[in-house]
Length: 256
Image (cartoon, rainbow, N blue to C red; front, side, top):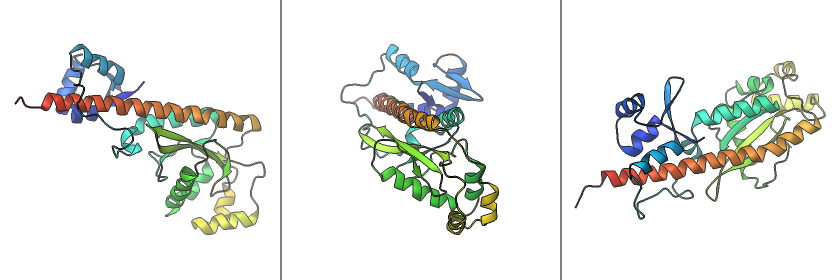
């Protein structure tokens, strides 16, 4: 279910936050509480607008999925990414990262393995990860495959599309290859690359994910489906935000 935030309605309908809260509390808007925050089901908001004859006119401006310039971070709310990443990671026993095409993660990686955590506590380590993820994003092989990461662990990725464009990747990683732990020479190379003491790396080599061949194949099978789901959520959100943009523009137009 695609959801809108209070900020979405506030900015797009040009009303203040307190007005949205009052309407939600009074049951005048389709809304639900998620923790302490209001969330608004996109499909019910759309029906709510339709019932009040607030459809945009045919020539009203709409968002262009391909060329509006919005980043994936803007289009896909962080709480969705975190929830989906946590669920997928815990279910399949992998680390999950969602990034834009520049390799920048939308939120903190989910279900991190211990080796990744200890290495990425060091200054500059995140930048190295981002560079590797950027390379993965621009290696345009559309079939998910496992490949070694900067730590020698296996990872695979699939693309998130917005309209006809590739806007990001979802990555499953932290998986030990069949020959693990790595040789001393590789540990020393990781130590040099990240500025982490080799003994510290050695102490955390067991804190990775070990998957059977069948489990790895399941990850490869499900990864494109998860990417497709994220793509559909994002596209639906963009479509609805475009409709709300048009409604807001129409509502704010002064009569001639």
